Length: 299
Image (cartoon, rainbow, N blue to C red; front, side, top):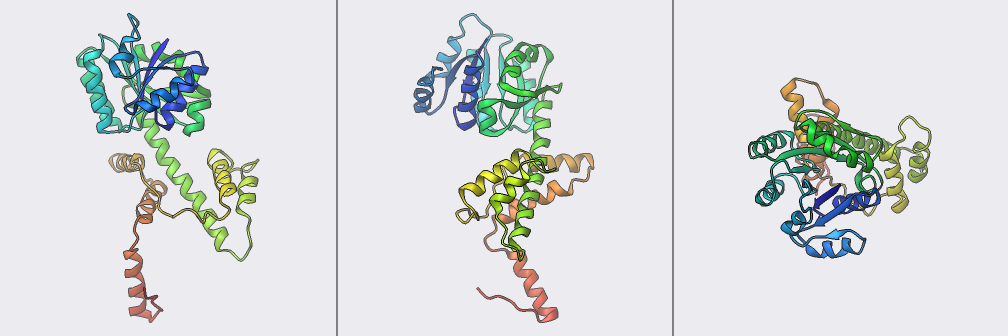
C-alpha cells in the first residue's frame, strides 16, 4: 500500500521512516521543500507538490496522511487536496485536532464522496520512528483498508480502533489531559526533593525510579534523560506551554460534569508558569502583610 505523507516536521519525518522500514511505500511532501530533499536521501520518494504526490498513486486508491498542526493548517491542506482526489479516497489526520473539528471535517468530506479518518498519535518522536501508539476513529471500511499499515507502524498492542469519526482524536485528547497531570506530579515530586535538607542526586533518583518502581515508565525515563543532560535543569526556564489538548479535556469534564481536579490544576499551573509578574502571589503577600505584618519582598 502507498501512503502520501504531508508534513515532515519531527513527528512526520520520523513516521515516514517508520513506514518505510515496515515495507510501506511512502510518498512524502512538505511546504518547505528542503525537507523533501532531506527525506529523499533516506530512500523515501519525495514529491514537490501535492499534485505530484497524488499523481504518484496512479489508479490506486489514495491514502493521504496529514501530519500538520491542528486548526487552520488542517483545513487549508484539505481544501488543497479536495480537487486532486477521487471518490472514496482517504484523508487521515494524524495530528492533535479537536474532536469536534474532526467530526465536522468528516461530515463535509463524506458529503462530497471522500473518507476522513482521525488517528491520534502518541509516543513522541521515538515512538513515531520505532513504534507508535495509535488511536483510530472513522468509518469501519476505510479504517480496515489502512489497518495493516496502522498495525505495522505501531508498537505491539499499541493500536486500537475506537469507532465513530472523532473517537480517535477524542481518546487522544483525554490521553493528553492525563499526560499533563502525570508530568505535573513528577515535577512537583522533584520540587520537594530539591527543597529538602538532603543532597539528592536527581539523575540517580530518576534512574532508580525508572527501573522497577510503581512510577516507572516513559515519562520517568525521559526525566532521567533530562537530568543526564542538565543535572539541576539550570539551563531551563520554568515556563511550560499548553498546546490545547488539556483545555479541551477540561471543557469535556465540565460538559459531562465529571470531576477532574488533577488535570485542571496541571493546566492552570502551566498558565501560571507564563506569568512573569506573579500578580496573584503579590496579592497574597500584600494581604499577609496587612493582616499579620508578614514580611513583603520588594522588587
